[in-house]
Image (tube, rainbow over all chains, first blue to last red; front, side, top):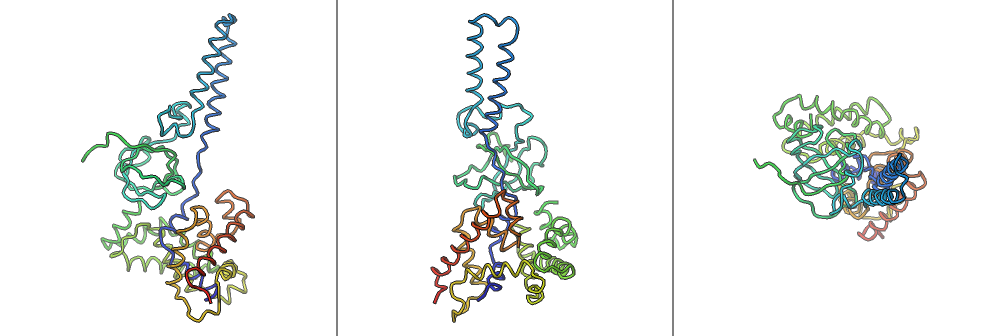
Length: 175
Length: 184
């Protein structure tokens, strides 16, 4: 056995590993910078409000300050807020930066790669019934429900998306 | 047209299947083959033979990962077409790859030679032990034949980081093969 044979034997590697290496690496969405940006925005808005005429009264200033702090606390949610009980981060940022969403049914799972059919597509980018590949964050190991509501980012391949966040889907239409 | 629809065309024995396959994956298959062969004519023939092989094997096979299925055929055919002497003269990347992998072989004088298919099975077991990122980097280098720079760019890592990860993975492969009995 030599290096050439070793390289040739790579031809027998399982297709799931070949497919897995083909998809672009997931660009993990870092929620902290987004939360920080939302917090800054809230701070700026609060500052504008404080500087507005008629706010010179110390009591009003204190109330405005408390309101700004409350807005900051709301906006600076942790990254699990979107799937946990807290306020989803997408609600804390302008709608224009919220990722697209859709509801899918999981057909098969290979590690972090899901084969799914589209149930409903929030932005109409996919057709109901279309088969697509959904990529999960690489360390994801937990059991998943069959019907998922996902927030996603598109990938280079037309039928592939990367899930940014997901939850069990409700109200899936029955056939 | 998505993969499922193309595969349905194969099952209906509709020759449009080959045209759609070419449209969807022709370019990527050619790049894969050319990267190994560095000869345009050979790469084109490998891709054409890939379509033919897919036509012959679908059905009964219904690939789960259609591109991976095609790419596997294409790589297999390209490796069979590879002229190693000529590749060495042209300092092709494939020669560097084989030299790197030679370091993973515990004992080159081993009497009982492993068949490529057996070794492939062992490689599958080994890949299952790696982290997702290390496995993808290993596959990009030794299956797709990507350069270190391309891998670094793809994974947003430094080149030295990629080299280190590959070296550790090769060492782990060597240890794995030894553990599996590929040793004196």
